Figure 1 (tube, rainbow, N blue to C red):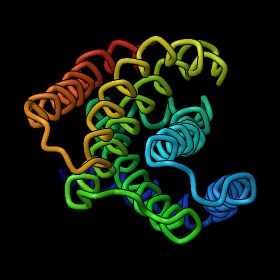
Figure 2: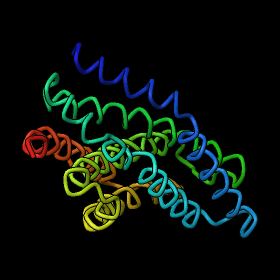
Figure 3: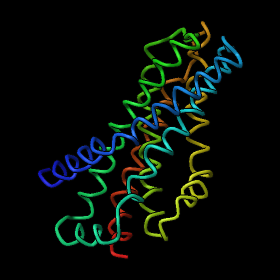
Figure 4: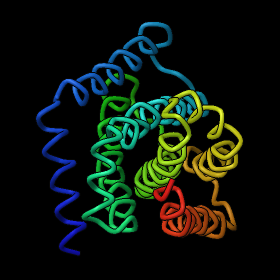
Length: 216
């Protein structure tokens, strides 16, 4: 835990020193929602939900994809000599989860202020926003690690991520739709725990596979 905390502290300090990256994400988020507001002031509930998750997906790509790609080769060699690879991947997963939790809640706030909030079950939707942000951050952290060890090409994240993120987005979208209508839907919690199961699987794959990636 001590090594993980040291790595987490390093990531937060770097993010704080390079605040332009965080400000760029916030500017992208506000600009995207403001543009939607200009084109369609009060979108329908289903459209609102689709736009929310699409924008959150792009925010996740921009926020999380750089986690490994920004590390230089010499710095990675230095980390290799002083840290266990599992400590590194766990610290990156935690850092990106915290970052995406913040961005997800900010996105919900901006959507509510500029586009209104047609959600009828706000408690469950807030749970979905938190879980969805965590799911996306975990997935793109793993993809960033793979891309960094395959030439550091960020385009690989999009290529590898598309077939993997589609099932995740479908599950998130299906879980969100019933929250915009007044009807009670059976089996909602079953689908929710499927999403949690996917997150656990991604964490397990990250911890198992990253040491092998790290050796290369």
